[in-house]
Each structure stands twice: as C-alpha cells, then as structure tokens.
Length: 107
Image (tube, rainbow, N blue to C red; front, side, top):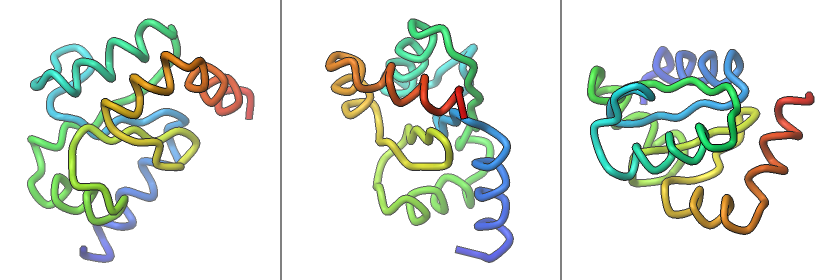
C-alpha cells in the first residue's frame, strides 16, 4: 500500500466516528452484505459515513491490506476495525453494537 493511500485512510477514519468501506453508498448499496450493514446502522439511528470502494480500485485493495481483512464491507468505529457484515449482525443481535456506537458517539 502506498503511503499516500495509508494517509488517506487514516484521515477518513479520524474524520468519521462510524465509517463503512462498502460497495455503493448508504443510499444505494451495491451488494447484499453492504446493504445489511447499512440497514443495521440505520436501525440504530446513528450518523455514519460510507466510502464506495467501487469508485477506487487502489482503495478497494488497500483497505483489505490496511485491516488485514479480505472482504468488503468493512466497518470502523472510532478508528477501530469492527468487522464485516456477519460480525455486524452478530454484534447487533447481542446488543454489543449499540453499546460500541454509544461509546463512540459520546467520545
């Protein structure tokens, strides 16, 4: 990964408490897994931003290297990698996600 791309990702994570690297946007997800994540965050009613990895091939590959996670979407809360669709579903169902989001938004 280029130093410029790493800087770009770090900047995005610093600027957004809840950030989703996904296929498409929160208004128009381009895959089912990305849609799952958007629906969960919308259900929680929390502010979040998305980055469309389909628009930038270097970012699409780079974020996988950055997180050491092979798939998209990827969710970050307070700059920390949380996981993808399956992990978000598990965290939501257990109630842990709500707690993580509340802590992040309070900080």
